[in-house]
Length: 393
Image 1 (tube, one colour):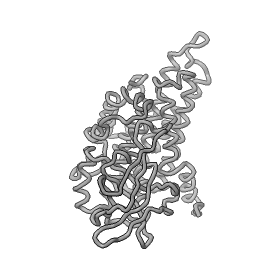
Image 2 (cartoon, helix red, strand yellow):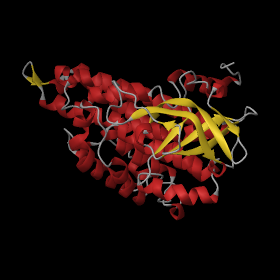
Image 3 (cartoon, helix red, strand yellow):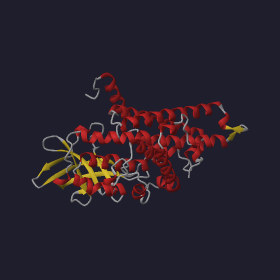
Image 4 (cartoon, one colour):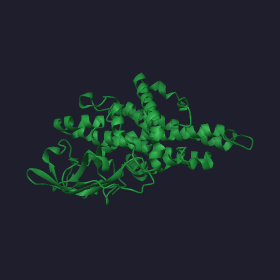
């Protein structure tokens, strides 16, 4: 359970006043679920490198999977700020929980909804929304991370099916997935997406072990050895890197909200501990350097909250640019990882213990600062937007 009372979660600039009653109800409902279901077991899951049992169906039951997908396809039909708030509350518990939900939502359900056929939408989306199906997203490869255009996974048109070969790695949910949205190059060199189902001959998902980060979720590879993919599984309405990159924009948006939750968890724990821990005859919260740290934490969290709220309004109006999303992802992850590290110091030696969340969040955020675009890549995206000069080539 949390070390601090939930009514101490910060809203220094009255951002709740900018939210609707529905937003607040959704956020508080997810917060209560996290507190009762995830918090009592998250440390044990991370310590023992095991996923939380039945997590995806539980996430489906509270409407956290594809919440912006229309109700006719099994989603909740919510707006983008609601999606962000859900991600924030999930990551307050652990990045692995938010990753499981955001991969399912932004990297699996989003492309099927945006680029899939009507048959594909009705076949897959309701089961993904409920958590009956677990999805994975296949873009990153052993030799190609920041440069997805260099992908080697490829498919051939065999007349009545496609023949898929290649491998993807660092894939959240891979060992558990029922389906994977996979991006591969055709014989014409163009990138297309296709849905690969568990059970297709030649499709395997070996698990990646010995992780220091995201230990409460399963990570693995997607390996394709002459996998026969039915032609009706090709996503018909997108071609080129626009497809996977638009998915990443949705995921990066969710991350920019999610990491605020991790920062809040560390900040609130540090505030509570600093008031209770006594040294030199008084609480350490009374010392100037500790107050400086806490004031800086709250300032950075508030800035991130405002950044995400404005980005959410832009996204609701279909005006958010990829560069704006990159800025929020980079800024907010850096903010969160700094708070995790610095707040650990406030707790001293206790900060490394499993009873407190700092080390777990810090280790998780080392992955988050890398995936869905590294910090350096996002800086260059902003640089391109500023100068008009592409530093990638």
